[in-house]
Length: 264
Image (cartoon, helix red, strand yellow):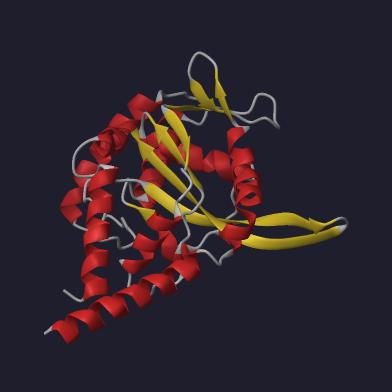
């Protein structure tokens, strides 16, 4: 009936307006420039292009560096993108969007992916205390098995023996293959029905204290979340084309939002 159709569209419009107001009323809307500058600048200072791309300390001379394939800052999430993301979820509130700002590290090997985490901790670019555990994912390689392989290598060769990341990766993959038979690998991934199954990465949401000068001599501070993604080149290559492609992800999200809003 025409009346039912009119009511459905009216409710859909109200829901969209409600979500849009939420998305445009958070701290990012008011302080986007300050948030992006303070979150991203510390990461960008550590990424240097020499013969290759490296993650290198700008505070400590002689500190170990990590080779990268790529480093990217997260593109600014538009209002329409935020609204669609919220409409696709049952709890459509802006405070549930934690990835308006973030970074992505792409490495050659699994070993280098874990080296990135170590670097970020040692350089105080992230703190365990500020990580949101329920927003974390690791379906790249189980941490306990990674530590086990590294400990075996130290016992066999000593800590002074240097192995290439590629050689360590071969050992990691061989070990994981032997462990698959046991069934439980302790991999975990935050539920996301819109992501493809071949999207393997380490992801976490951390928080940074943002300081904003609202008027001369007056400072306003708050914690704001940001996303860190770490993946190896295999996953990144798949993401550029195929089922993990960003356009496919967005299309699945739009379809879910349409079904929820219009009740079809």
